[in-house]
Structures are given as C-alpha cells and as structure tokens.
Length: 270
Image 1: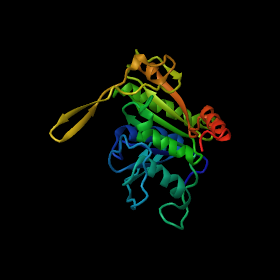
Image 2: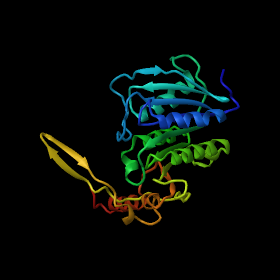
Image 3: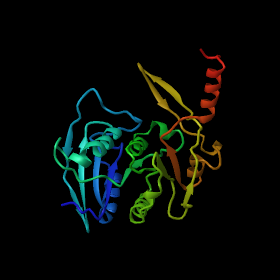
Image 4: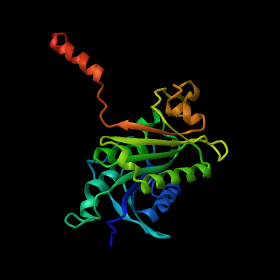
C-alpha cells in the first residue's frame, strides 16, 4: 500500500545503483517520504543528457530497504540517468511495471545524487547527475541535483540534512516550473564549512590537456577555481560554501533572438 499523505520522492544518480551516497540519501528521506530509487545499473558519469531510443532498456527490481518509519524501493536500469528519470516519471508513476497497470502516483520532487564529485560551473553541462534533475524539470517535477566535491562524511551529512529539510518543509514547491536546482557541497570539515550561498553558474572552462600513451589519448585537467566570478558557484564552492544554483530549461538567448530577427527583417540573412 502506498501512503498518499506522504511526499513522493524519486531519486536517481549517475554513479550507479551501488552508490553508497545515493543509498544514504534514500534512507535519510525514507522516514519523511515515499522513496523510489531508479538508478543506472553501472556508472554513467559524464554522459550528460543522453538517453536511449534505438534499443530496449532492461529494468531490474532490487531488494527494498526498510528503515525506522520508512521504506525504499530500488530499481536499476541499463540506461542513463535521463533514462531512469524519464521512465520513472513518464511510465512507472502511472503504470507501474506493466503497460496497463496502476503506478504509485505522480512524484512531488526528484533528487539526483548524492554524486561523488562536483558538478558546479561548466561541469553541470557534462554531468549525468545534473541531467537527472533537468529531466525531472522537463516533466514539470521539481528537480534537485546534489553533488559532493570531496568525500568528507560531514558534507554527506549536510547534503542529507538539506534534502530532508527540502522535503519536510516542502521547499521544492518554491522551484518554478521549467527550472531546477544544482546544489554542490565543498571539501570542508564541520569547522571549515561556511554555510549555503545562492549563486550563479561559473563559465570558466577546464584547463584541458591530453597525454598520449600508445594509441590512446588521455584527458586530464582542472578548473581555475579562484579566477571565476566571485558570486559564482565554482568560486564560492572553493571557498567552503555549499552552492545552490538555479538552472533554466529554456536556453534561449533573448538578445541574440532580437539580433536574428533584425537580420531577417532587414534581408541580411537570406
């Protein structure tokens, strides 16, 4: 039986179904929500918003987990993070695991993560974790990506507490349709963590370089963290803040749209 009085939470990630960080998030939310996990069967880091359309997807129900006053259902899929969210929202919510059956009902919010590795700045454009939250927003469901820059257990606790607060206080209802939150947690201890900041997305590119070994080219590089705008997610994350950056689905650049219209009207384009 599903408890219709509880918030219904979907959790996805790109680290795969075995991720302990994702399991920790699911168990933390279970006392306050109906929690369903749909995650890739293997790691899908860096796949962006890729999804599967020309081959079938394998779905496997995993062992559920019971926690104090809560329960989590786990499912793995052979596809990407976007596949997982797309299936959960577009089919499972209304049909369950059949084509004609009944599902658990619509989801109230989707968390993607907790990811091991930051997804601030331009990382968000490559991230499968962020794509999970973006896919939720495409379906009109509030999406929140959660990522850790470091492996400090204290920051995982902060991320879990943040998600619990979002659910208990229904803060996800403050996320406008067509937007989603990209939340990143710094390398910090309890003593050095500086709290949360609302930020804009940094635009600085990686310092990409390739090494050549045999017939293979290996990519490496990092970010110039402190050269970013001081009100951006990369910069503030590097200063010890957790950053909350709202992203929009609509990527239209209005100024360029006006310029193109002027060119069309003036006959300068065709």
